[in-house]
Length: 319
Image (spheres, rainbow, N blue to C red):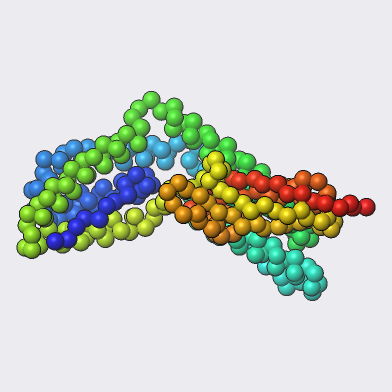
């Protein structure tokens, strides 16, 4: 007997959730035996799908939605321009310029394809990239490569993008009518009732396989949409969850100091996880040139979010 895979409904994006429910309804109609089995819930499902679709349309027609989309595209165009500028510098006749461009290219590449990321992850990565390229370690290299005007434009566009996202959140919170999350919760409950009926009928059916093809086609849709979901992101800044090895005192050299200590994530009931630089976190530094106290900041990436700041000492004297 085939079993229906669990759909991670709460992690589906709005459009994907609506798409999945339509697929499920259409599949149920395609197989008469399933259609008859879940007929008692069909009217409720139709009504919920209709309400969900209308609410999604309202969100898409929000006053801030179109500017958000256009501003996100402008950020993508700026990032493309920055990559092309750095790539051009890689062909410079001066070997020092070429080496600096290579370092910049690798730093930008460490963030992956920001253009394909969801809005909140996009804005986080853009902030981190700006912080990196304006830090003591990269600022001179970025200026020499011709990135200064690009960074200025990226900063102003990122600030506008954040304001638009905040405005949309306010608009959504102020809507007096039913919230999309409530409709999704009702739809999910009806879906689970219908799936429960099919599962029970398939178990009674046994080896006859009456429901096998329906389940197989439904599982294909579930697997596709489940693959788009992401697990809960762990917070580096939560209590003592993230531990970082102590950084030994660093001797001042007049250049930015960039130690990279080992970091681990600790979760109760699980073994410590060694965090991987560039995959699990990015790093920025503050006050890391002159003698005194310097900051090393870990910024969560991928399966991790939040920030963890540690300090280290810079010793010696500079003229």
